[in-house]
Image 1 (cartoon, rainbow, N blue to C red):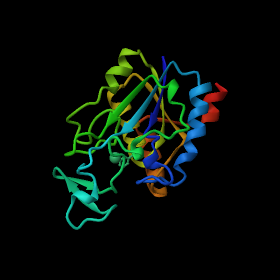
Image 2 (cartoon, protein in one colour):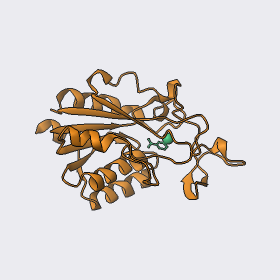
Image 3 (cartoon, rainbow, N blue to C red):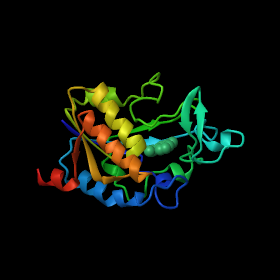
Image 4 (cartoon, helix red, strand yellow):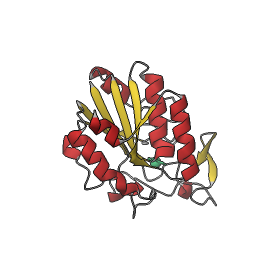
Length: 208
Ligand code: VGL
Ligand code: ZN
């Protein structure tokens, strides 16, 4: 079974959002084309879903500014602007994303004491989300990953997919993704490649 994993295509990561990724909304039409024409059996979306007092927010650290380096539960942590707070419009999926075709939504980042870049597990690897179990139950053997942001949630989700689903072919869809930092995107692509993630474009997929 072929699956598409859409990472965090939410208002918060699009222009006008609280943690806007440059050109983030450009992924929406590409994702919609993959949804409609990519030949997927299973379509999954992750949703960054933080409580208002999440410990990754600079607002929770005395004297800290967004994008400062800080600490969360003893681990180094980028301190983010408040973003994707549960129940706010910032946390909603982009309104043009064709969510009717999505079979399963995986929320993440609910524990205020740890961040969860990956859709599969918290950054400290202590708690799993249900995503790997869901994909196994669907007998997924091919997983294409795209969305926001390449250098954070997309990368960590792709690396965890390789680690937790070793028999699954994992690919990163570059033109259906955007990142926060250009050098971070380059490094993320190199790291994904080094871990056996294929790098493809939506045209490669639609030509199959
Ligand atoms: C993300 C930073 C904080 C992401 C989520 O979706 O890449 N980045 N929370
Ligand atoms: Zn977040």
